[in-house]
Length: 237
Image 1 (cartoon, helix red, strand yellow):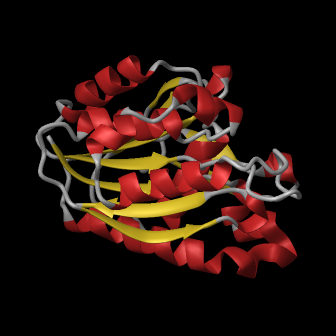
Image 2: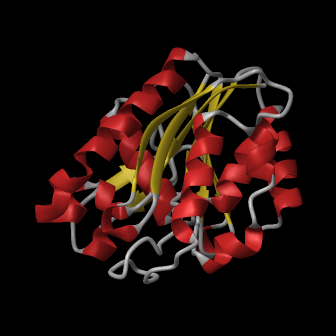
Image 3: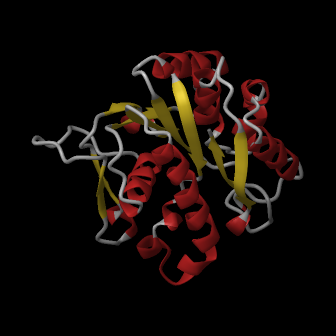
């Protein structure tokens, strides 16, 4: 049963070494993520499942001990999910889960075993919900760390340039995540999310499936669009 959830953005820029001189610009987002992870720890879960968007090579389950790095950004930063494995896993963590691992290490997570799930951007809403339901019965007390960004089209300098629909989409996402509105998350417009390159759509709908039948309340901790990309942090408990 899902007992708590945290929703965080997943740009590698959250890692100060990657952001370099721009690191202070995301200090508020980092603080909000720390607060959200504190809600997970307080729930005393038996298992923490991290869900985030992934390219094809990173999709599927990543067990405890899975490793990732930010060496592709020219920095010597490596991360690991929970306790290191005796044998190196076959695959590296996708960046969304590597950011999650960095957040967990930063907050000293040791409250429960950790495993990850990389999901594809095009995963159908119905399948996302099914996956969430499957996660919710993996252990007696399940916590979710859900990684994902909103639109990348909030300004003319954004990665996806300016799209007038982006602000409204992001506001609806923030409202749904901040109020733990499962129905609203299930109803997110998949086509619009794709056009706005909102990579968090599928992970958020996995969360919706896992939260069915619970009475969790949501709290919005952060919502902004630095660099023209929508970032949302929320906690459910």
